Length: 86
Image 1 (cartoon, rainbow, N blue to C red):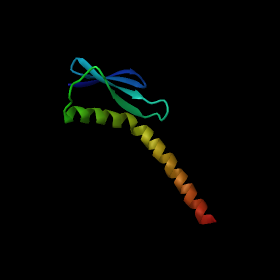
Image 2 (cartoon, rainbow, N blue to C red):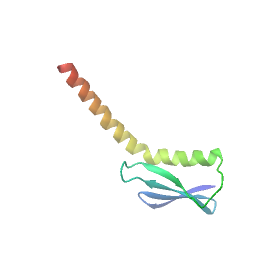
Image 3 (cartoon, rainbow, N blue to C red):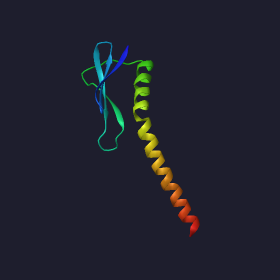
Image 4 (cartoon, one colour):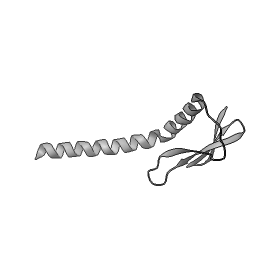
């Protein structure tokens, strides 16, 4: 069983049953969340485990992705409108 323990707004611990096998941390530079595996755990993970981690990352990053895409889409529209007016 995979669990995600929220430590703060930018930090989660990822557990596989009892052991910690990684952390999800929000990057200070680009504000996206990333998964960082624990180096001391030399175990393999099945596809379902990685899929659960991926889904958690996608959910955490969804709102920020929408904001980034909205900003760049508006910049692109402004650029196209400017080019058409010249």
